Image (cartoon, rainbow, N blue to C red; front, side, top):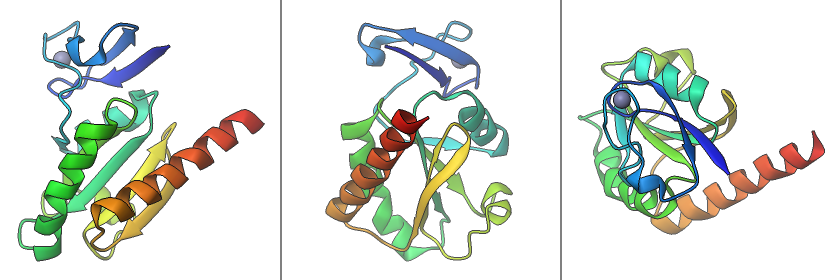
Length: 150
Ligand SMILES: [Zn+2]
């Protein structure tokens, strides 16, 4: 199966066909495309991932002053390690980016799952690792249902 993803370093779209996705490198800058960790993105990076990614994209919206966000960070990282490259994990700092306000995010931490550039589901507030994986499993299953119906 071919996966299309944006490079974490330069936002260029890359096609990853077969093989180990963790060994895949960006055709433009040579950066590894999947590192098993969330990527900190700015507004341009966020837009590039939403536009280019053929996999679902999960965004963690956080801020440095937010205690529950800091508690959430290692949980999100652990999920990225297990689930990437099936899902691309991004982090948006609400103090430095415009996207959270544009998405109507009022409380953080907030997690939003996108597929094909569209929002699939969102959750606000701190979640445990189990809650995160249960929510994500359910949301990913709804994407497969939508795809089999279309
Ligand atoms: Zn690159």
